[in-house]
Image (tube, rainbow, N blue to C red; front, side, top):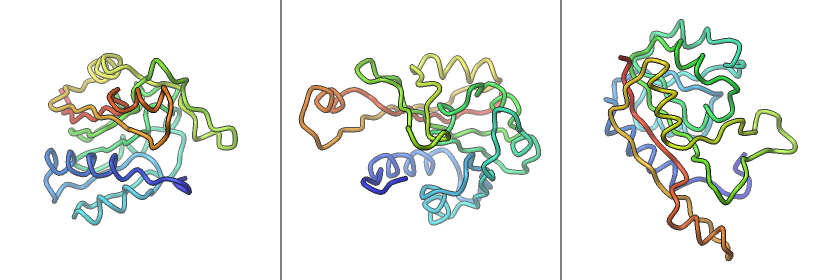
Length: 173
């Protein structure tokens, strides 16, 4: 997935945020298959179990049957047709999640070769907040950050100061 670039800035910000909101003894269910950030969480001292690649739009068993203290979902909900269902079914009482924000100057991402690597949603912050509220979560901490690219042009210039990612920590109401 990261053949050409590795999201060092995003991973560093996400790791710092996670360390601010969850204690190291927390057992985490990370939505999505094992990935480079799963390994970073383990290196930080967290006990991490990943879901196994099931379609979370139709099978929420993993989040219903978890004994984890917290669920993490980093850039997952934009890939789901109905993220409300999995958010509603999470049994853990803590959630740390991030999403890419909708950019007015860029279309939603769609891989031409990988059907799993497509964004059905690209949220504005208020939409994600509302989704969390409607599915039974209360946001306790939030952070937005940019994602500059090393290119020349109008869109790369806008990426210098337009927030691209939105991180939240929420607790079950």
